[in-house]
Amino acid sequence: MEDLDENVIIHETLKMMKPKIKKSINHTSYQEQEDVEQEINLKVVEAVKSEKIKPIDFWEFVEKNKSERT
Image (cartoon, rainbow, N blue to C red; front, top):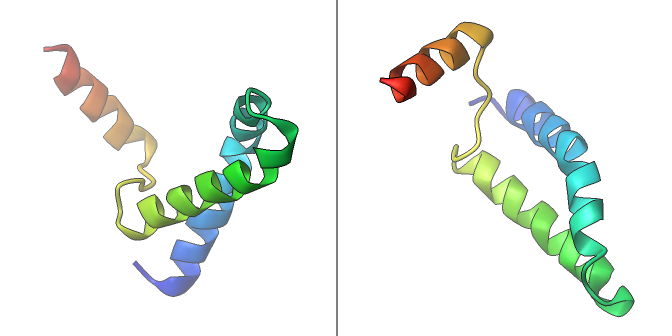
């Protein structure tokens, strides 16, 4: 994965997950919310870098779901 592509993927992934992260940290104390949010963002970045999270195109998605149903 090229650095530029990886940075774009990281940025887009964090952007997509931001609403869920914000909603989830509301369940923690106010004093810890910023730390928890940073830790979650760090874990997302690590997951992208280790390719545990990677983009797939539409047809890969269809094929993956088709194989999981059988």
